[in-house]
Length: 557
Image 1: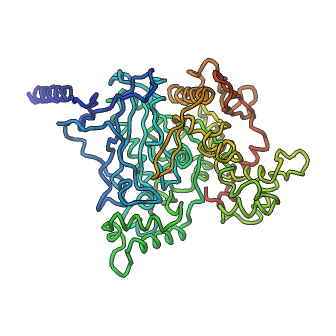
Image 2: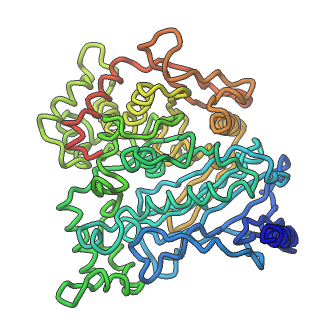
């Protein structure tokens, strides 16, 4: 008898779910909540249709007593009784520079793009994008995934996570009364929400790819090595672009950063429990503390043997303490140009490299710098690949983290027997940034310009998008096809454009020791100039140096 009562209740519940609708737009019901989306297409787009669902909460608002704590789950035990308006973006998390009234502390939301005809039975591949911004600024609004979904049968998702002080406040006080690396825990909570609910939008929870650039690329790596590989990951594949972070703060630096933030927020130990004060502090006080601390003061830290990051990512990779996943990793050829610390005219001698490049890495000792310089021959040395000291400087600045971690992880992934491992170098500049400063070449963020509709992102100043010309559009279409093909099958060439080259695996099929990557480059209005190239032995040697334990101890990557 009880069985029949339960059956009737289940039928009634399903009837209620099906009955929920809205004049606002298409409705997706995930059980505990229902969301009305938006089917408006961007101007000039005719190959949709795509439905967008924005601002969907994936955790409780991290307010009051939940500030500086791990994200807490929503109540998902009740049935949806009304429809939430999800036609627009959720608020950005509070950025740096911070402004009261711009961004919100209540920002733990995600955005979903789906083909309008996708159903719960579609089981489409899912791509989750994690934005960059140094862990102190950035918002999903600068990275629309409409083109990914309109051109290919995938589900696109972008997520928010707490930034700066609110996401990465560290120190012993937080350890005792809070949670370290809250921003990374936000990312994991969003990925777990996706596992539970993406089927309702037509996605396959067993075919999820995470993707990110710069701090987003670093986030991808940190999700892979999370918990030292002791816990399974809620994704199958990963794409890491221009992996950017470091140097990681030491324990002493973390304590100093905490004390500074508490003081700036008006929370002194003499006045009572500091964490209690910080949780009660006004947004104005948090904004003041944010703006009075330097960029990068609050970013992911090592948080203990049982923490999310039990050691530096590079050390965890070296020790094989990571979850093996199908992987595509790469960098922009001008990443180092962006972070060399000066313009070409400022690099005349070798000492200029010591002064400018290594100001970013104050923990690197002089002997290590000398060893590094020996791996990058001076312009007047026989067979040097560097025509100027500036080229030499930018190669070093790029390799320290942006170039080498993707190649290093690809190699270690192979050693774990992972199939479908690919590498790339992006050699097409962001046109807007290039026109402003041609010496930067294919500078940092050039790849996202093409992957996200000509985006240029400027934090609180907002985002704008530059229309592509024909050759830019050709590269954009090619890249999105590669990225979504990898997310779908693990092979970026499976659904590539017919005019695009085959993207071969990182491990050369004809030579077990050779390694290769795809160099993506603009060409004509129909086909690009992208081509496969071998990675030089010199590049591999340099990366082995930068990823060695002795050097990592100084760079903190």
